[in-house]
Image (cartoon, rainbow, N blue to C red; front, side, top):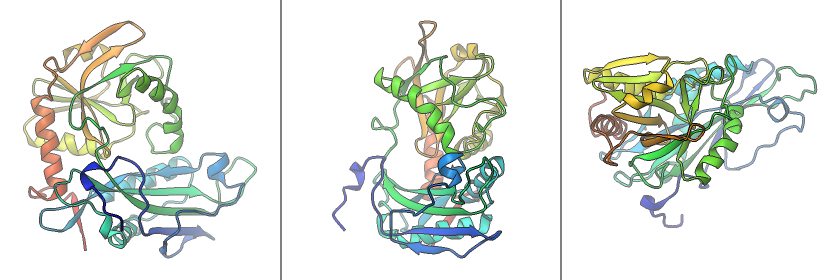
Length: 339
């Protein structure tokens, strides 16, 4: 293997040795199969290509100081994939088979797990697609589950530093009672135009308002949003927001730190009252927000007035990372050792 500078790798795709696959045919899941091919062979009439029968997940493996590999809350990813499958009528992969596939693909690609202290991790991407051929709009009868891995660096090149986000009311990420609460590719396709426009203007992400009334805070780019006010951790509740496993973990940690957690509709006007704000998800963990620019109303809300990461975000970030890497005891049972 070519020498890799683990501390300089981007957040992107790098070829690894193996992926793991499983087929659903004749009403049942088969056995896990190992492949070294980066390609999949599917029918041109597959429902994933025509009717969006596709769901995915994202999780990470970390090398600890003790030389052991840890994966964070993979059971939650398995259950969320099942929820996505139910929403778009795909066959549900059993949690046990999901976890077995994660363990196998990580061990098969063990040499690609970045070393402890590099700031990088092994990103794990499970994918479930409808492969059965259909011309009419209806669910497939055959499915393919595939899981591959790739080493990645930090999601944001600037690292754990505050960045600006913007609001553009002319774009919606998902519709009420649609697929916003499940992790399917269509939600991300819908965010590409707004995201590209925001990045061209120098912003890290788009802070979406609710698609119905444009009164409440929704998602922040590909991540959940939370704000800190005093001793309260405040995060939006909505039927068009993906339930983030990272956000769920941060809420638990905040409660454990003695904070009050509020998961509720958050009116946009509350932005001006936050001491800290951030987006959170598997890729970035926590991405602090320095300011929110409302491009439609020509207003700016400065969150990090001194330009630094707030004390609560910093404490939560380092606590979660310490659990993921094995630097602190896993008192919540979130980590699985891969061996």
